[in-house]
Length: 528
Image: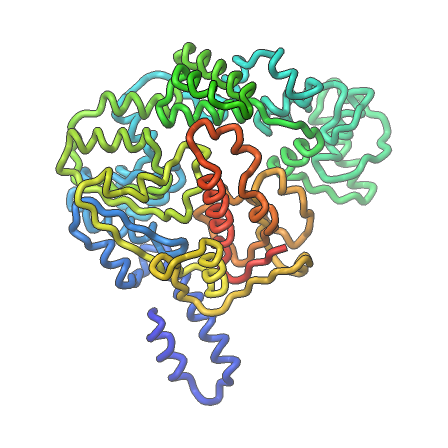
């Protein structure tokens, strides 16, 4: 339903309906239109606007579609793919994560299988039998290469070292297995006391005096008896989610650094750029800031390389070396702002061997927030340098967020007239004060994981970081404004300047992260 059709329908309503009622009906119709536009139901026909239809039908060989938040980029990408599916084997959709790949595959239906992540595409080329190290496995694997003498400089005790070196779920397991601490961080004297304390912690209860029960033989039976006794005492129990347990345990065991995570990130960025340890050795000499960390990280990188393990970055490098002629006419790339040197290397080699392939890339430079993973906006900004005779198209209409939110996002990005997002839905509210809103169902979007524990309130139905929120939408969003605005040179960035990021580029990415968080909101945005 177009805006014009909506207006005509409102005008046809009987005079007995008040103006307030008409406004409410108009809001409902607009919301239906918004939901209708974003629906994946095959029984409903999506009505595309002019810009979207141009993108869907363009015959240009190489196309970059600049699609602002909420502009319907996935719907357009899928519709363009549908119209190319006369020979489905000759169309390839590439996404940056498995969830997006599966969503596009589902929308295309009819058994379409050629929607892949870059890594699954690389795997189909390499056909390697090697076990690929997943991200979490890589984190644990490189931990073995960190000299304990170096690690001990970071933390003062074993617990802080473990917290740095283990992922959250493994750290929780580590604390469970210690005999001297409960999950709440309290020192305990016996296994029975530990199990009672952990059980209460997991169910968000304070410590209570419980009759002594022998837990040695069967933990499950012990917990069953304990639960029964507590319930008989009138205590209601609801177990916390695994993620909430992880967040609370991590908060109970604070430490200064996250050494292993930083080293894993260092290695991932280096490999995404295809930089070898020897090249980085030379660069380290020019960095006085964090030199001790850089030397440690690079020594671990060398040992990791010598181990000959295969991770996702290695897979992309091998695929670039091994790829040959492909039976493809079209490659459609989602989230193009996340392109990195390894992705570009693979695609350029594919085009070199298959010059007839057409490229359709869609993304939003305002949502380029994955520099920490090696993404580089130069491929987006300078698209014409990497792809011959390109056509640059734009979709700027936001069908997700109401006008007040769209305008605020434009303000944050200091948008020029021809780059700013355009609001389709009227209304919306930006509520900026120091008071925490009550009686609302809110999604709290944070700058980092550590901020999730700042607000504990029944009105917050979900907590999520800005990075994780990308691609999602919520009716009402709560942001802590200072954590974004005063974090423009986030402390973690100083460890990775060796890879060429300037302070201005780092600040720009932090601003884009704030924009992503803002544009998750549909109706109301609370800034406190």
